[in-house]
Length: 400
Image (tube, rainbow, N blue to C red):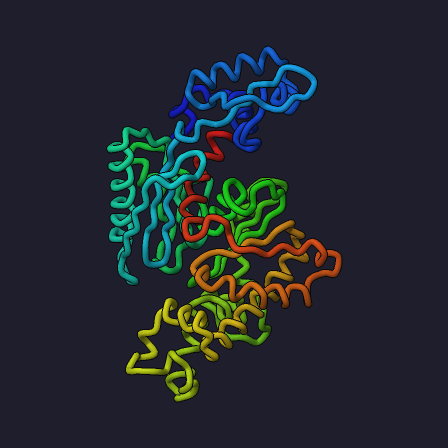
């Protein structure tokens, strides 16, 4: 479904270019735009007038000029465009209604059962979208489109979930189903890639031309920004850092390989190891061994709380996971040479604990010329990074 038809003025490339440059600069003058684009000043004046009339740009005061008349600077009207962004994860759907400044106006989270059928998951997705559209209508807002971020392999060109292992999906035409249901354009991508895109536009990756964003949760994935563009690979599988080998004779992974990063550094891997330790009677001094709690009932939040409380066993297990993450990151950084690495996903509650160990291992293993400029940080958009990244898929096309 044609997305640009929602905002007719953006059907032409030059208005999109001007709008994008103003957004990136936050405030810029007409003269600045003429210099940046190479377009004639009269052309810029005409384009800016049209964007002002369309309510996409606004004049926001005077700029600096020590030599004469101060120029009028322009800024984007962030509430001129609103988008729904969805994060479809292993057991829940998180949806947000955001504006062009990535300000979240509404958020809806709905869970679905671990073994939910395809129709049940789809109905959960539909319910989240319907709820957000209803709230947008109540606010008097028009929604330009829907962005969807799915775990697993996604054909972003066709909007198809090729393989989502946690929910057992293969070749599900999610974008088409949503477009038929709601009559809005839908754009779709893998969740880690969407997170990388959102961070590049609105988070801690702004202004970074070469970026690696790693999402750690029940699975581990990454998104790669090269030369300012999202890199998806020949078969939409770029960024599968979770399935790089970190132990040559390690455990079998669900992908069929052995010793993958996911088998030792994902949340599921840490919980699995913890449960084995507690069931065999070790770790009795741990907070996680106190009381009558069944090891099989322990959750990621239980382990996070133990880490934050300084529990020896919990900290040891996550120190080991962080070391393996450091190994995988060093290998990836040696190949891609990103200017910055961002860490996000479900481990955000303990990311500040993990980062020193991750950095320590990366410094020890990364190619020596990369060490001086090493930047490894948490994502800037927090727990909304994936959903906002999904919305960014729509913003990117509108302004691309």
